[in-house]
Image (tube, rainbow, N blue to C red; front, side, top):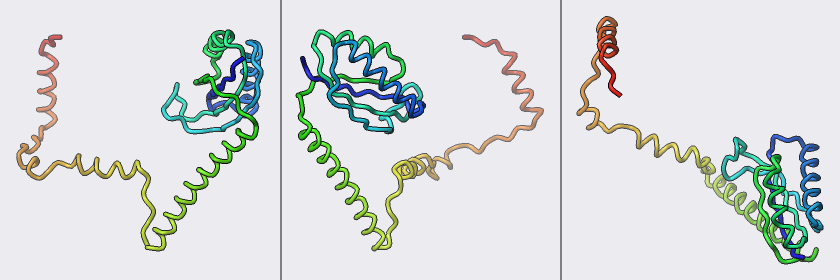
Length: 184
């Protein structure tokens, strides 16, 4: 028996009780294929890296289970046909003890705390200098685009002034265009 890790994404449109039902269905699929679930980690609702079937958020769940290698193709087929999940991935991993798993979670939490502290320190340093914190990246990206889209004065001088047409002239012009044979 090998140890596998299954990570799957449930669309965030499901309610909490529906999500628990989907988790139970996936556990049933694994158990029907001879798997023993050793650990379940609910990662939670996260923003997706890209849009998947018009979903931008998903509920992530990671399962660690042991199963015979012969059961993997049937598990992959069953998960592929299961339409209540957006994506899944099965990876063969080394077996972990509870101590190693908890140490990994603590390490991950320390890293997250480090970056939170770093961000807060930057905000306080900027506010003490009287500077505003950085703008969101989407706003910063629009400024260069707006500058790039403005035509230069030399381009405006080269172009001819727009011609004003009366309604009658405009109607005549449209009639001429519509009467011409359109060659496709």
